[in-house]
Every structure is written in structure tokens, then in C-alpha cells.
Image 1 (cartoon, rainbow, N blue to C red):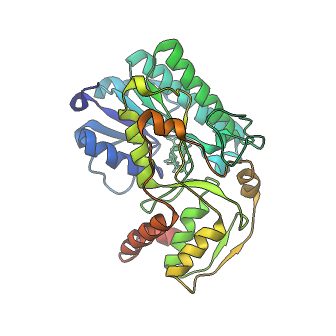
Image 2 (image 1 turned 90 degrees about the horizontal axis):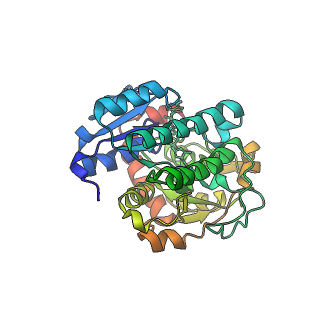
Length: 326
Ligand code: NAD
């Protein structure tokens, strides 16, 4: 067991949708003096804990920060996501792949424990989609998916070859109210709430019956922390674990939101993201995550919708800048 008080946790890509929420969970465990957030840019709003600039391609600065702050764990979240990645495949590959390799090399050198998220994008059109098994065909069709698939294998390699304690989850689409998504194929499931609350109509970029697996942010943060705090001898998957919470289509989430906002209208204008979504799982088979470290989701679709609307409404009252930007 690691001594929690002595651990210093560094988060990369911490300004993003996941990092901004995961940082709070880590601070609750380790204390704000022991958590360092990093990203390409420091957020405008002041943070209660240390937030530094770090480009994950900059190996020297990464090493300097690890040495200076005696970092023991890295949560490596910096990445270019699925939809955004398609506009510049080679740059996305570089950031997603070299970024991960820089972290894994640092982990080997400084004996760091590492968390790195994979994604349902690791699968592909030939993967059984309902449910998608833990071990199955993986022929991803996006540069993001290719980088996640290769990344999973690199994580396993660094664990087996060099003993690096690196752990990973294949997140479904993540839905949270504290931040906006960063260019993924499941972004509509966050955007739809903002539009409903603002009183506007919504155009969905996926077809109405496109079912994808999704997860509410509190479940995603809890899954991450539970995986990272499980005994190492319980971790039998060193590529990345499937985890399932809920699966729904745009039509289904619209129906749930419309119960709260009867005037809310949605239409459909599928774009290139529809093609990506069609190669992704509808539901993940996650018995190994359940068995190895006790994974169990708390939020299903109705519970998530209720909680999202409750919390977003509170934020809308003080005219959040985030909402203005949509
Ligand atoms: P995001 O796009 O919101 O945030 C990513 C962050 O990485 C951004 O703040 C960006 O500035 C930063 N970044 C980009 N290039 C960088 C670089 N060179 N150096 C340092 N920082 C850099 O993404 P997110 O939703 O927070 O995703 C975090 C992780 O979770 C990613 O690995 C992503 O693949 C994974 N994931 C997310 C989802 C989801 O639905 N959000 C689903 C599956 C997996």
C-alpha cells in the first residue's frame, strides 16, 4: 500500500472536461498541497491548488516538475479527442501517443504510478457491439481510436517489461455539468442539457436511434479512484478495463429531458460523427471490472438527467460564462 500522505499527484490535461472534476476527487483524498494540475494553459479562474503549464510533448519540463515536486503518481489525461482528432490525424497521433510514451518513460525512471484513460473508441466496426466483451476484435477506425488501442498495448508492455503500475479504464461518453466536452463523438449528450436549460431548440449531430454507452461524471471519477486505490494484485487487466453504466440514444435522452421542459424541441442533422458512432459499442460487458475491483455504477439515465438538470439550473442562475459561449 502506498502512503497516501506522502503521495504527490500530477494531472496532465487537467483543464479539460474530466480533469477539472477528477482534480477535486484527488484533492479530497490527498489534500490540495499534494495535487498539481497541469495543462497547455492555466485557467483564467483562480484555482485553490497549484496549476502549472505543461505541454506533455516537453519531456524536459515533465522531468523537472516530477523532480521539483517529488511527484509519485501521474493521471495522464492530455489528449486530442475523437471528432477533433480527425481534422489533424498526425498531430493527434503525436500528442496522444508520444505524450503517453513520455509519461510511461518518466514512470519507469521515477517509479511513478500512472492512470491513463482509454475509450470505447479502441473498438471498431468489426467488434461485437451489444455487448462488447472485455477481450475482443479491436480494429478502430479513427486516429483517436488507433492511439487508444496502441496506448493500451504500451501500458501493458510497460507493466510487464518494466513493472510500471499503470492502470486504465475504457470510458464511455462522459456527461458532467461542471465543464464542456472537448471535441468527442458523444458531446451531444452534454450540449443537449445546456440548450434545454437556455430555452433554445437543439440540433443533434447523431441520428435519433444511435445507441452509445455513457457515464455520469461522478461515476467516472469514482471508478477512476477505485481502480487506482485497488490492491495491485487484484488488477488482472493491464491494457484497459471495460466499464458500463448506461446506454441510450439521442431520442431516449431527449424524451427524458422533455418531461422537465415540455417546450424543448430537437431535430437531427447527422454529420461525420454519425459514421464514427456507428463503429462504437452500444453496451460494454464489464464483469472483470466488477470482479477485480468491485465496479458498480450509481447513475442510470433517469437519475443522471435529474441530477444534471438540478445542478445546471443552479449554475444558470448566475449566468455562467460557459453557457454564454454555446
Ligand atoms: P478534453 O478535451 O476536455 O481535455 C483534454 C485536455 O488536454 C485539454 O484541456 C487540452 O488543453 C489538454 N491538452 C491537449 N494537448 C495537450 C498537450 N500537448 N499537453 C498538455 N495538455 C494538452 O478531454 P477530456 O474529456 O477531459 O478527456 C480526458 C481524457 O479522458 C482523454 O485521454 C480522453 O481520451 C479520455 N476520455 C474522455 C471521454 C469523454 O467523454 N470526455 C471518453 C473516453 C475517454
